[in-house]
Image (cartoon, rainbow, N blue to C red; front, side, top):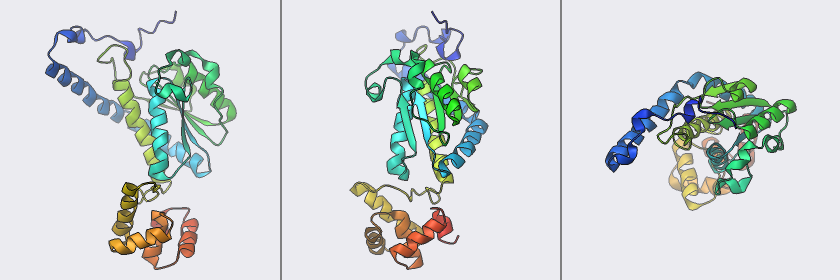
Length: 292
């Protein structure tokens, strides 16, 4: 039997030994206190996160993918972050894999994390970046995926909530966010899961900013699939160009709901094809296409 009691994420805090005796409002206060500490732990890893983003960007610029791999909560957080990059940034370059397959997102399949060979079955190329996510830093499924990614020539990032883990040692880049023992001992869906969500937010979002998927803090590559997003895209065109709502909506329709293309059209008072060519010449960066 593997012994994991030495891991900080497995520790039991003596000061929480009688939480079942406390009133609910005190329990809420204590959990909120724990949650506030997560942001500080992430801040301590800022340099590691920034280095990871700067390493990811060239790979995605060349057409590679950002692949998240995890088991349990870590896998679910990875799948969640990846699934939201499509509508937000109109990008299919971020994908997530979870131990046990897609069904494990909604139904726990915790035994799947011990299968290192399943991690080695993930499709990876030398162009990709593989981020292994594991609170403990020793999950066999994740380590198997990282070993497979290294053999394929992919860039690897190990993200753990313990220091000096096998995952950190194996990967090209290590991100270690040490959140300490959980409110419920060993329940890494709590602080560790929150830290994973925060860090993956940074990895995907800041990579997309560097790839020109935003103009300032506006999601100019938003994928318009409903009325809320059509309104958002129209407002983006208005904000960037100063156009009226009517003119922005008309340009967006002519651009096939492409807010970035509509913005170049309105700004330059040009047609869709010329605007598309300007964007191509600017590698999709709106600010450059506008001549800024």
